[in-house]
Amino acid sequence: MYKSFFKRVIDLTCSLLVFIIFSPIFIIISICLFFANNGRIFFLQERPGKDGKIFRIIKFKTMNDKKDSNGNLLHDAMRLTKTGIFLRKTSLDEIPQLINVITGKMSLVGPRPLLPEYLPLYSSYQSKRHNVRPGITGWAQVNGRNAISWEEKFNYDVWYVNNQSFLIDLKIYFLTIKKVFIREGINSKGQVTTEVFKGNS
Image (cartoon, rainbow, N blue to C red; front, side):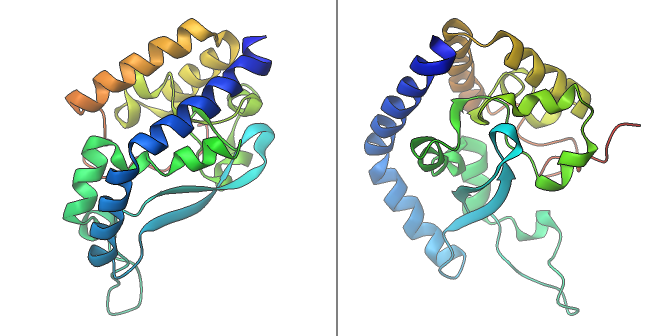
């Protein structure tokens, strides 16, 4: 009953409430990013959701679009703005995803939505992460976030799919708040973003 009904009710109610509470911060961040990123406030990208169906995730844009002399985007570390660094450290760049939750494409808690090009690389076991809606936070995020290996992430994701409950979600909510305050596991070692998944060796 929780998975089929109450989880969605909680997602919708909490997302609307948090979005209203954070709306002043949302506006301030939008203004800062407007000037930092030449008018581009949001980062939109296609991601696979429940059952692998593609949707567009929305986040605050933390990197500019500067390119080298050949027209290629510069390395992530060179494009990450000062505002973007702050947003990532505080996880405030995730706020717009509440819109994805409100529209039913995401949940507050679930496996993080990854890139569409990863879909054919998953094993049948790893693909189980798409049996539920992806989340803003999840079991893998509170157990290492970007600082753990892909194998560990997928194991945490599938464990959550098989064991999700109200109490587990509640635990993830509180652990997420703790992670945000101690700013732990934000980046992969030596990188500003998580490393690319290249499939199973």
